[in-house]
Length: 56
Length: 258
Image (cartoon, rainbow over all chains, first blue to last red; front, top):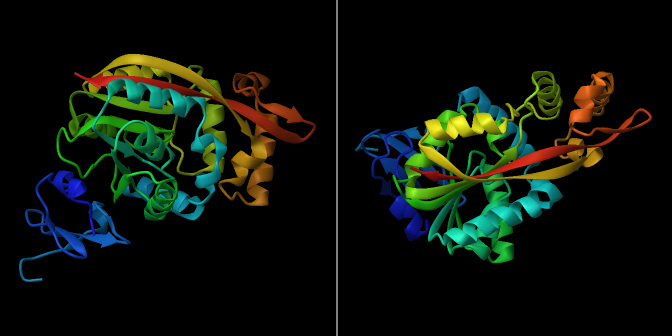
């Protein structure tokens, strides 16, 4: 569960665009990347992101 | 940060995270007190601590300066350690893994950014400073503390070699004039500066990084064989064959975004 105030200021580290917050990951639709949330901590590292597409 | 340097930092601090909870030099001291005093005078609402490590700076600011502190680090085990420490102190800090050169925060999101005892690990300080300036609001303040680089090239090369043998993720410490020009280039104006000496007890300092006994012996021999003027520049104390301690000078800078 990510803090609401943190959600309001988090952006994609690559494109600085808005993010979609899911239960276990954070998605940048522009970059098509999914950042993991591990132990409740958003892992906003570009090399830790998984490729994402609208169908996954 | 280069991928290679990021991996070096993650390997180094992932394995040693717990040692930073109790490290006296990191937990506090006059340097942290002065940063907190600067922070209090600024009255910020939201603070970001970059390269938070075990979270000591973020925790001190959350308890003494502002109720909203975000702490960011490259190394996940370090963040988990910091989160446990913050919880045990009742400090309201939230955490995110992130690289200082690619911060995952909105433009102008913070009133103050802190960074303590970390830039000597950064592979690209100018890129880090540009990102810190980006996430600060207009006229926001960057409170920086790091090991002061020596102005003399031979002394600087000596201590950089000592640091790298102990910690391969050490890049370099910068003299005050170099900080000043890097900060200017990133859009900052230096408003205040300070210096604090820190005595490093050799066994504690080398022990924290889990050096092998052989690497430690080689490092001791390197220090003993170095020119006396280089050792004197950092006040290295020797007792027979043993290195007992040396002294780092810590530079503190408050720089405001133009």
